Image (cartoon, rainbow, N blue to C red):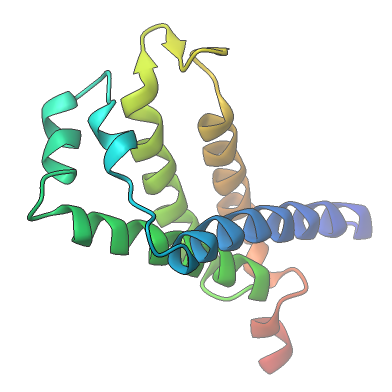
Length: 142
């Protein structure tokens, strides 16, 4: 792999890592934050997302969302467990994508492909190129 390819993969990993870490930590630090509004507005699979927003489940949903984003971001930033974090990143982005999908529109500004799909594709790229081996803390420890 060339130096430019390694730098490109590192840039994608760090950029996505910062994005996810910030999204997660900002939710953790915001005492009143909840995913209930997003879940209740689901256009696709509404019963499932309304279940996730139900009073007995919403605290679990919020916890998994906040800490999932934070830990995925931290993993990408440090370069540890990148493959594992990428799999969960794909899952969480897919779960974010489904409620806004009103086929063939993804939200109000996209036609099928939106930012969630782009993030999923980046996660696949990180897995395919074994991004954990490109300038990571794990590599330094070995």
